[in-house]
Figure 1 (tube, rainbow, N blue to C red):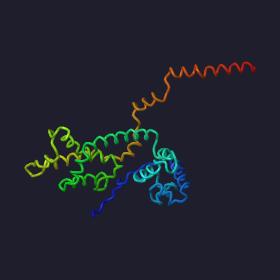
Figure 2 (tube, one colour):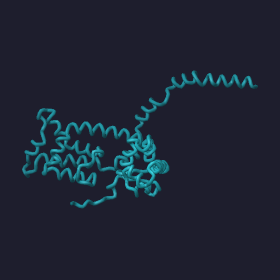
Figure 3 (tube, helix red, strand yellow):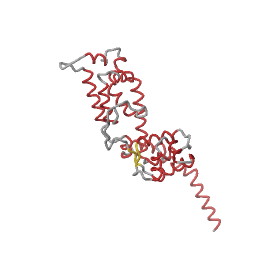
Figure 4 (cartoon, rainbow, N blue to C red):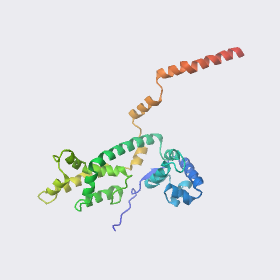
Length: 266
C-alpha cells in the first residue's frame, strides 16, 4: 500500500466563530446522551474530539470531517430539533452562511446535471488501466487520497465529471461528437492517445481551479454580493408605501389615543 504524505492543508478546517454557542450545543447533546462516549457516538465523532470541542481546547477550529459528521448527526433532528441551526451559527457568520447556502445550491445543481450526463463515462474511464492513474494522481493532489471521494464530497465529483463532460455529448449527438473510445484509438506520432493528452489537460484545468482554500474557508471570508442583499431587502424590508400604510393603520391611531389620554389626565 502506498504511503501518503500529510500536508498542513490535508485536513479542511472550519473556524469556530462562536465557541460558547458550540459548547452549549455539545452540552445539550451530552445531557441527552449521558456520557462523553455516548455523545461522541451520537455525533459520529471521536470521544477525544468531542471532549476537546466541549472544553474549548481545539484552537478555535475543527476538521472538515468533524464538521460534516456533526452536521449530518444533528440534521436528522433525532437528538434535538433545531439544534443544527445553533451549531451552524457557531461556525459561520451570517454573511458566510448566505454565501455557503448559495454555493451549496450551485454545487448540487452542477452535480446532478453532470452526473446524469457522464457518470457512466467516468466509471468506464476509471476502470480503464491506461487512464485510472491519471485520475488517481489528480485526486491525490486535491483530496490527498488516490481513490474516488465520498458521495457527500460533491465538489470533487463535479471536478471529475467536468473533466469528462465532452464525452457525454457523443450520445446526445448520435456519435457526431467524439467518443472516448474513438479518442483512445487515435494516437499521435509518439504513440500517445488523443484521450490521454486530453485528460491530462482537462484534469490539470480542474486541479488549478481547485487550487485554493477549502470551500468553507472561502465562504467565511467572502462577502455576500450586493445584488443578493438587495433581493433580501426587497423580500424582508417594507417599502415606503408599506411603512406609510402601517403608520396610518396602527401607529397614528395609537399616538392619537395616547395624546387624548394625556390630555384627560392633565
